[in-house]
Structures are given as C-alpha cells and as structure tokens.
Image (cartoon, rainbow, N blue to C red; front, top):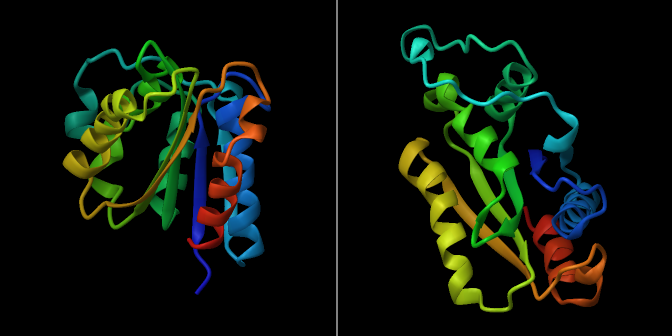
Length: 179
C-alpha cells in the first residue's frame, strides 16, 4: 500500500551530505511506489519559538510563517524522515528550531513511522548516539505511537559530496525502498 513520505532536510547546503542522503531515500521510496515530498528547511521561513505559551491553549502559533503548512503536512504523512548534519555533536539549529515549532500540533502528529539521517565529519558512531537520543526525545517521548524504523549514519564526511563515497548512499536508497 502506497504511503505518504515526508522528508525534512535540515541541511543548509543544497546537495550537502545529509541532503544527498535524503535524495537517495526519496529515490528509493518513489521507485517503491510511495508519494514523497521533500522539504528543505533552508528554503522555508521558520522563526524561533518565543516560548509565549499561547499555543498550549489555542493550538495555533502566534508566528505567521511556513511552519503552519509544514505541521499540516506532517499530520498527513505516514512516514517522516528527519535529516540533519551534526554540528558539535548535536543536530543543527535548523532542525532544532523546526522541532521546537511543532508544539502547537505535536499531539496531532501521531501514528507515524520515523527514519533518521545524520551526517558528520566524525567517524565515531557511538558519539552520534547523543544526536539520535535527541531525535528520539522528540519522536518517542513526545509523539503518540511513533515508530522508529531506521537510522542512516553518513560518517566521516566533511565536504559536500563526500557521502557519495560511503555505504550510507546505498543504505539510504535501500531504506527508502523498504518504507
């Protein structure tokens, strides 16, 4: 049965390493017959959460930007891919801002399958678990009935394109096919 797949690419570089893995995941999922939408956060207008708390009662953010539409797209998706380059052993600011802005509708983002894609210059997969635990904090601990389905580690990559010479490229494609 075809699924709606939403890929959130937090890479600030179009064609950067995590963005490239998103494209391969998308290629695999599309070839498998799924409907895929990729959103590059760098191309969206998303302001920082102000912590005002209004959304706790209204389920609407006071900020009027692209996040409103993205939340609706998340609610409609069956599968969500969260992809980030790792900066100083944490997800990048673009993805963290995106996650923070999910507060108005996070209780409506339920019954989703999640995949994580991370890329880093470091090669120590164990150190990257800090990043994965942060993503799990959002999905597993905050979203109802979220299912982690897979993780792609693009490690040892620094310059844009380095990931093309790693096994992660094929892993992303194959994981996309198995959605």
